[in-house]
Length: 181
Image (cartoon, rainbow, N blue to C red; front, side):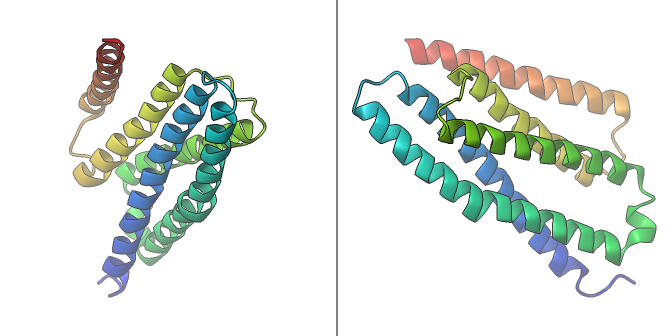
């Protein structure tokens, strides 16, 4: 029988996963706003960019990064409570691979924050919109892996992953088209 605290720890893990993703999604949206502010004239550009940097720093250091740390800690705690099942489950290995990639995404986003702070962000708003969808792909992949726990074969999973990616790309193109009109 699992430790009675396992479900409590899992609930906290999920709460911080949601907080982490909310922070990542909003952070990249702020990058987009920061980038688009460069097209404004002075003093509007400076005022907006200064405000966006304050918002980004607070979001990153008060919400997003602490949520990432707590997500990882509660995840490790769950594995420690049930290693005989979780560490032998192939779906968990796949999930942890995506989590490692998500951590890379997190720290690369932190690099983008540093670029904003130094006013050296070179990505276009379109590139940043695509970057935002990478987090969406991670979210969809991890949720399906955890919920289906290996019920979905690798072929179906791969097709689904790329299908979601294609739908996101089409959605971005449609949004871009509608925005121009």
